[in-house]
Length: 357
Image 1 (cartoon, rainbow, N blue to C red):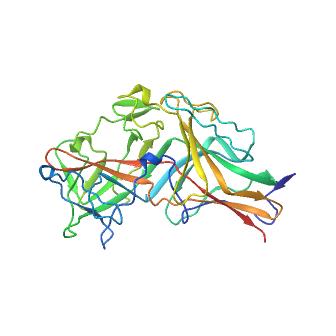
Image 2 (cartoon, rainbow, N blue to C red):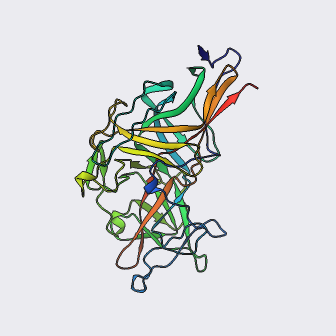
Image 3 (tube, one colour):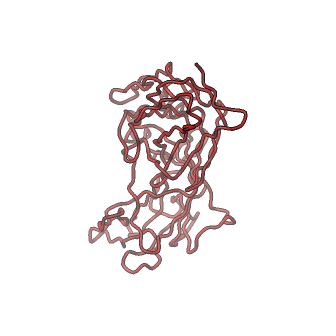
C-alpha cells in the first residue's frame, strides 16, 4: 500500500540537520581537521626549505607540521539537489578498474521521495536546519539503500584566521592580488572555480578554470588580509569546486585518469557504506568525459535498514560539515606560504525515521 505522509493536521518536513554526521565520498581527498590554538586560530609553522621544513600545517592531535592542507567546517556550503530516493535493493553496480569502466546504476527498486529536474539549491550552515521538501509519499516496507542525485558543482563560502604556532602572533599568508603581493592572517574565499583533481587553464561546464598556481599572489585563489571579511567585503564570495571525476589525476596531464565511479567504502561517522557515479545531465547515463559529467549519483547502504510502517511520520537526514572544506597551500622558492585554493567534497548521510510513537 502507499502510505501518505502528509496529513491534514500536520506537515512533514524533510530536514537537513547539521548536528550529527557529515563526511565525504572521495576518501582520497579527505583532510583531517586543522590544529588550532587556544584562540581558535589555525596554527602555522614557519617554513624553511633549506632546513627541510616545507609544510606549515599540523592536524588536530599531532605536533608534526607536515601538511600543506587541512580540513575545516565551512560557514556556508551550497549544493543543488535533483532527487532523493529510497531503494529496496542495491542500485549501484561496482566498477572495474579505470577509464571509464563504471556500470550504470539500476534504479528500478528505488522510489523517489522528491524530484525536481530544475534542482533545488540549498545553503547548509553549522547548527541550522534547512528544509528540502514539505511532504512525500512512499510505500510501507523495508528499504536497504538510499540514492541522492546532486550537482557536481559544490560552493563554499568561508574564512579562517592563522597564527604562528611559536607565539600565537598573526601569521603571514599570501593571497590573491592582480600584481604585487597581498598578505594577512585572515584568508577567505572569492568567486572562482576550481576542480577536485586540480585541472587548470580550461573552460569546463561554462566556467573558466584558472591557470595552475605558481606561488605568486596573482595565481592564488583566496584573498588574505589583516582583518576578517564582513558582509560588506566585496571580494568575500562563494568559491566553486567541480568534482570533475573520481580518479587520482587531472585529465589535462593524464587523459587516461578519468574515472566515473567510486566503489563502496566505509567512512567515519557514517552508518553503512557509500559509493558514487559521475552522471550526465539526465541523471541516469554515466558520464564518459569531464565535459558531460555534471551530476553525482550518491548511493548508501542503510544500516540499520529503514522499516517504514503506518507509525512513520517523517525522516531526518543528518549531516556534519566538520571537515568538508580544505584549505590548500603551497610554498614557493622564497618560503612564502600561499593560499592557493579551497577544496569541497560531496557527502555521506545518516538517515533516521521519525515515528508517531
